[in-house]
Length: 430
Image 1: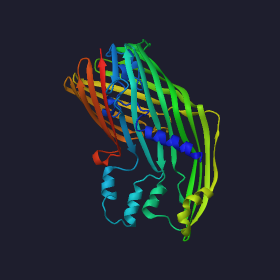
Image 2: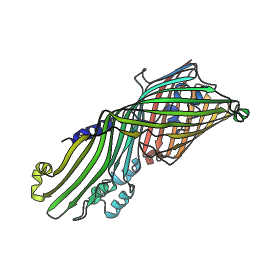
Image 3: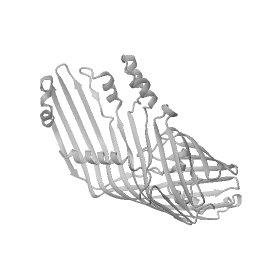
Image 4: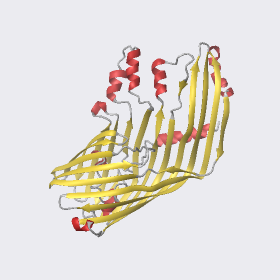
């Protein structure tokens, strides 16, 4: 059946979500819960603010890597909108009998729009900077998978006779992209603004986007009805997928050192971001079925399923475009003491697809260097797709080499969390 070609693309992207992601995560940003835009320097500016390349504090040369160049540590983020270890242990894994009231309480944990799972893992293959220039190559998959609430109602209560079980809220949208980015920043003079700050910089970056694959559902209608003597299954799927894509995106920003204690910046990231799919292949999938299965015919379910297929086709379509989500970043930094820095950040996305949210995300963080080569980092954020996030991190930072790590939890604290993020990285600077 031709629908399996679409399903294979979806499965491949879902598996690769465990290897790549769109978010520009690194150990500092994870530990800071994303309050990172003013601190980014050198090879870390891409995805944050290219204008930082024009400020003081940038190395003459830097290179980020994992085990070895082109063999990076993955930066992992896994989260959902409903389930935490505490809920699982308290409600699901008790081994006790669940009455209808218990089941209703369990069902209330799942949002009306379904269980949304986002698994984000970043692999930056090469990140380097030379003075005011930075270069990056990486691979990423972005997207989401939604399971309808009615599916969990079926698990808890079964399906009532003659009452349709609607599975239409099921949704999948994913895309896999290789990014090649070049960024530049330099000091500038802008009337009035330059008069009130010690240093002002402007920057821009250009990103070439090479698409591997896209898979998304346009229509997903499915239902089942149980009768005393039979089951009726009815479903329609319309989806499209593409292999081979190309697109562009741009970042622009301003960054300022206000005085010896304060810094601030602003950037617009992934402006006009898009990918056009179908350079290799673009197809639409249509699949529908209707069948009745009598209780005595369950042993023949395979043949009945084949007989119930009404439409099973795929056909070539013109190339189509997908979004590469853009966002605004506002950052502020305050040096409380020579060894204590405070950071804040606001992130506003302009779409709600591909693991983005219209809800702004506000982050706060601190870095304390009781020992100059052993920084202690912590952050907290509210809003965005994650709703709540906190992080910690540290590292071994020497003159020309540093190793850093960051860990955070999403949606709660400890066993109440609904996800986590983890990042490791090494850097050479001169």
